[in-house]
Amino acid sequence: MEANNDGSMSQVRHVVLVLSGKGGVGKSTITTELALALRHAGKKIGILDVDLCGPSIPRMLSIGRPDVHQCDSGWVPVYTDAAKTLALMSIGFLLEDPDEAVVWRGPKKTAMIGQFVSDVAWGELDVLLVDTPPGTSDEHLAVLENLKKHSRVDGAILVTTPQAVSTGDVRREITFCKKTGIRILGIVENMSGFVCPHCSECSNIFSKGGGEELAKLTGSIFLGAVPLDPLLSTSIEEGKDFIQSFPDSATFSAISSISQTLLESLQTA
Amino acid sequence: HALAPHLRIIHCPGTTSEQAGKSSSCAGCPNQKICASGATKAPDPAIAEIGEKLSTVKHKILVLSGKGGVGKSTFSAHLAHTLASDSTKEVALLDVDICGPSIPRIMGLEGEQVHQSGSGWSPVYVDDNLAVMSIGFLLSSPDDAVIWRGPKKNGMIKQFLRDVDWGDLDYLIVDTPPGTSDEHLSIVQYLSSTHVDGAVIITTPQEVSLQDVRKEIRFCQKVKLPIIGVVENMSGFVCPSCKNTSQIFPPTSGGAERMCADLDLPLLGKVPLDPRIARSCDEGKSFINEVPDSPAAKVYQSIVQSE
Image 1 (tube, rainbow over the protein chains, first blue to last red):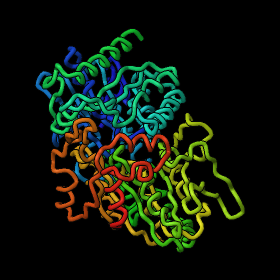
Image 2: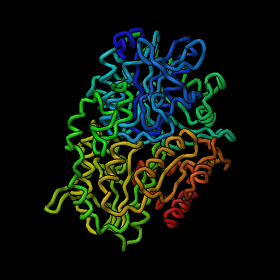
Image 3: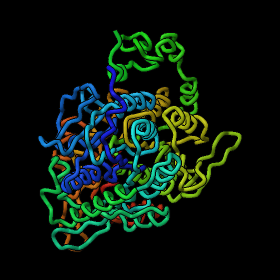
Image 4: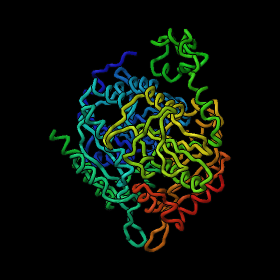
């Protein structure tokens, strides 16, 4: 089936990769929350999930096992709402059994990503966020090569947690960006402290300050810090819209400010 | 007629399988001729060499997850420290996370380099009886990125197993990256002519983690790797000030306990969140040594005892 490759990304205004290098820092969570915040600000958003081994986004948006089909311009993404303000395409949707382990070596992952990334009929989007697995390997090279063929990649957001074990890997991801010519839009520090709901004492469970230090060290913008929040974790688990449920929380305000800064830097580029 | 490209990719039998080049999914694949010729099926001689080399290693334990950031490296490092606290045991920790090697930092060995000798590569020693190998020791700067595709990563793992002069070991612990991909397939394949005790699976309580961990468990079953048990990390946080517990990573689907009950696997322990763990890892110290009386340290010790 011939897909209209040049058409599928032509109405996507901005493409932003969400990278880390380190696993478990909250790339998928931050991708989901930024998407919801940007939508809240009136933008049309798409999420492309290329984590083959551990695709987390469908659950975070309460999307179970949709049937995906192709139209003349490629794969039709799954919309979270009737107004089509938030579209999702996860590589997991193409697998016959989404619970089955995807035990694939690099070349197969690369081939699959190639088939998939450039063939999604996004239609008109303000921002396409691309969620990635941790590392600097096949998936990252494949998604970048394919995106570049069809669209400009505005840049990447790097997610870290405060501790050195995390920033150590994210430094390498920054090198990956520099080597592959991806503009670094900024660093987000996730799990930045925990405020005890019982007594309001702040505990730095995953250390402190690493995100800002990393930004300084590498000359990148520090987009902001998102605290550890059990309400956010629960929301993500249950696929609820955190932005709608907890608009007065400190967490929401952190995410909102990051999304605003991101929008501004995309629009002024 | 040929399948749609994405279906052909999904149903690829694999270049080393009996069906390579011959299955119905192969029609239209650019590699069909090569696979059908049998050239891709020859077994790697390194497998036998590694079998020979590691035949004196008494116990091999893989630490897996599927999910990133759950504490595999933290666990592997502390397991190694605890086993090596018995000075009569020779312990080695092999880090096969090629893109994100955390072990050098966690073991306090940042900046160390590997040396080559006549008998192969020398691992880096933390103590007389505790050796470590990681790609981190081969990088000259903390900013160096290892941007390698699968085949090159596999080659590195082969070298780690075949060319490192480990000596006679009581324990070889292998720390892995998240996922079910090249590194995992390679480590299992290259160790296939040796005895592997099994895998310890690490998770955190929430479903977002368990979702990936169940896939890792299926991977173990597929490759016939025994599962020693599951460790649930980040299992609740006790506020140091008011002593109330918060479930920061809520076990909305029953946590590891429910998953282990469903899959009939041993739950080795539940380790609580403790800011001192992150600090120890960042500083390259053993958490079990630094704060031996903490609830988390006690759980770690009991897990290791039980293995």
